[in-house]
Length: 320
Length: 320
Image 1 (spheres, one colour):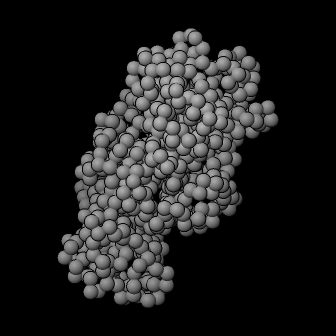
Image 2 (cartoon, helix red, strand yellow; image 1 turned 90 degrees about the vertical axis):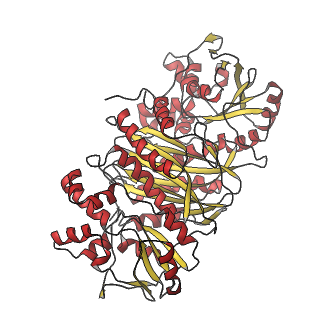
């Protein structure tokens, strides 16, 4: 185990993985603060990624940890219809996470950052009992200048998702049970949990369509997130046929005597986009975003049905 | 002990303490991301504030924790010569930090935010083994439009501080030894450690003076931070007479047989500003910033003296 000699030693590692220059970065890491150029309006969000809360070292490789800590933040920017333009990173390292661990973790994060041309503008680091990463990210809207907010849906709007729902929850279940060898039988589910794909292109495309009334990313499951998307007083009729679900979701549900659509509705951490669009605008969404799938309709009362039956929404809660 | 029922319950507490509206906040908390208006350039920085690394619950009240987590970030913005315009907060809460704890902690943070008219734009929360706060803050320059960077000093520049040096370290030492009753004998030192004062007005005033060549805040002690301020290859002759130090620093040093100027040089967490100015500009600094005190001069070689004797710089290191 090769330990870090000093903070400077750690910062040199960061410098090897993340270039200091970047579009919009006037002054990069190394001062009291970075200086960024951000004309007009930007979106900003922060997400924690903590050992034994959001990930386990037993089945996340260091590269998975670095990748996902950034990816879940990028997903929030995608859900705003924006592209990310910079981020900062606070991290805590326990004694048993050595130089090799962080080389791999930062390589995993830097791979995603490089693919997105996304500069790391600054950060802070500390010893801690557990691994922890706190990313704050900002982003700019596309050429339309429009941000995709929540809470703008109307009764009759089509509800749609971009990306699988329920798959990451199956991945979590099988990883917790079997560790990484679960990838042999559930490769897509395991990948969905370890390496969620932020839907940036889809978010930007949706923001350019004025008929799209609202959008968010599904991090806590449809059951918990859909009520957050809709204005107060509205609900939804959801139609989630088995054909909409990934075969690994239906296979896992069948093996545990569960209804697969419930796995989809209660499953969290998919980071699929969930949006609303007027019925007239739905064809444009389908044309602009491959893989967008209708899953229901907004209704004018605060009530939900799933495949025709009344349905109560309640999902994962950190304090529940 | 009153626990939180849910995340929504916790978020309601946040809403009680922090208004959603604020200057520059286009869309506040409650969506995937906030939307902020930030014309031109802004500075951005992030700092962790972690239990048993940066603070202990045994002698920090909850309000102290909330205050200081934000104050250390505000200090970085002050050191850039800016005023803070918004922040986000990631926090972890262990089981034994209940609703009352967070009410007080958020009241402590909100008191400072309110005094600065500083909006909380977003955040994330999670269970964790220990209390942790990760603040990311951004800020705008004053009317001059100038940011105060590091690394611009020249040989002959006057080095100065705004705020006490060494006092917070004495506070830490006596708090660790005696707990809060240390405040009876060392009230200023204890206050300096628990409630450091960000030097915002001073930072803005310094940025308006073109003769000021560099600035930073002293968080890890002069010994460690001064080499970070100066361009490579430069050093300094420091003159720190006892009269410059707070009486509690000299008293504590005397009680432990130490030289008081060394307490000042190795002491961390004061969040004093440390700046450089051309000799011709020094009178303007004194006139603009009450309490600015000269502590030495920049020299054209990478070497340091303290009160006339050669001196080796090395301070606190999280990985040392």
